[in-house]
Each structure stands twice: as structure tokens, then as C-alpha cells.
Image (cartoon, rainbow, N blue to C red; front, side, top):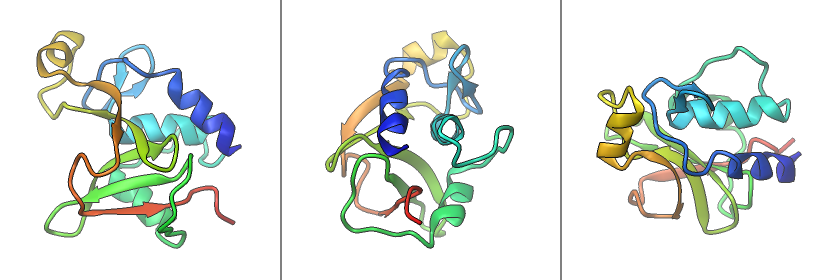
Length: 137
């Protein structure tokens, strides 16, 4: 399942970011992308909607310090809430919908803000993150 999830994630590379987005036609936000992937492999039921913090709460019991493909990286704000989530594609890189915000509601806005699904090295958003493994038993 882990390999299938990562393979599926690659399919969305380059699609525009869209605030509140949860589909490949109109775009994804960070949690929408991760939910789509986890639903595709059967880890989360279809129709469930969660924020980055909801995903953290769901998988907080499965922390890891040795990330591998399929693990989730969640970044936190000063209040301790997860505000962004991406999926590892290997031990050092993540894929995620980023660069946008609440004003990114169209493809044109995403293009202007350089907001799309992209690959980045771990740490590009800072070090206030935690890693969980949704595939852990």
C-alpha cells in the first residue's frame, strides 16, 4: 500500500494549489491532497474531510524519527496546531500542495502565487514539524 500511495502522489505533481481543494480537477490544498492519497489506498474512508491538524490527531500514535516514503510530515504553528501536511516520497523529500492560502481559489491565483503541488526537501518550511506513519500498525 505504501508504494501505491507514493506512486499515486506523483500523479498530481504540478497541479495547482486551491484553498479547500480536494480533487484533481479543481486542485488541492495540503490536507485535500493527502486525504485523496490515503483514501485511494483505503487508509481513510471516502468522504471523510480533515484538516492537517485532524490528520495529525488521527496518526499521532504512530510517530517516527526515521521517515520513509508514505510517512506524513506535519508543520505546527505557535499554538501547537498542525497547519500544513505533506507526504514523504523518500527519506528526505516530500510532496505537497503549497504556496497558496485562503486567497488561492482559482488556477489564475495559483499561478500568480506560484502555488502548486511540488516536491521539496525536508526542512524547507522550518524545523517545527513532526513525522507520523499512517501505514504503521
